[in-house]
Image 1 (cartoon, rainbow, N blue to C red):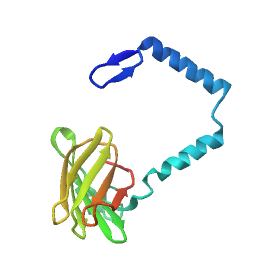
Image 2 (cartoon, rainbow, N blue to C red; image 1 turned 45 degrees about the vertical axis):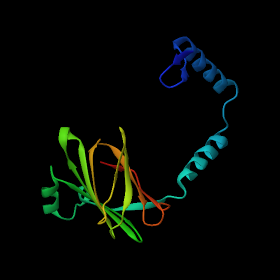
Image 3 (cartoon, rainbow, N blue to C red; image 1 turned 180 degrees about the horizontal axis):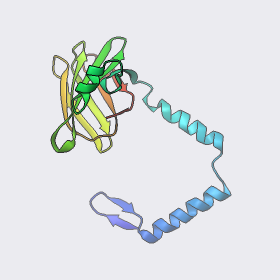
Image 4 (tube, one colour; image 1 turned 135 degrees about the horizontal axis):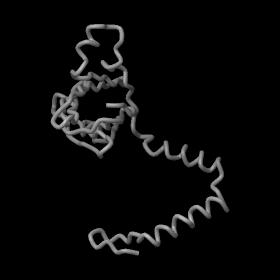
Amino acid sequence: MVDDDDHGIDEPDAEDAALLERLGALAGRVDPVPARVQEGARAAYTWRTIDAELIELTRDSALDRGDELAQVRSVGGARLLGFDAPDLTIELEVSTGARSRLQLVGQLVPPARAEIAVEHREGTSTTESDAFGRFVLQDVSRGPARMRCRLLGDGGRREIRTEWTQL
């Protein structure tokens, strides 16, 4: 094992890693994990965020096929997304920022103070909304992303998440 002094973590060297890989393959052949155990593990994993409310994508200007003018305007322009829950809407404008990265400009309706986090391919970008529910996130990578919104008005206990959306 190689000692990583920066983190206090022992990382396996190449020989140990190869041995661990062979042992894992042997265990998988000799005593594989039953399919129903794997299914149970996947089902249990979905409960990890049971306290978070899922807010649904209801509007996406990239999918608006009914209005030909909207399609013409949306080429190269900002994409507008709307996520709705019974008592909260997140309106989001996605545009290309510096270095072809994305800039997200959003607003919570009705206005609310919240901690906003966008999980994307390269990590998590965070900010807070102002008293009017407005927020801006810079330098977000393209690809799958979801937003977490922890409302601060009710002790920070209420958390809302969007579904994964391709940006």
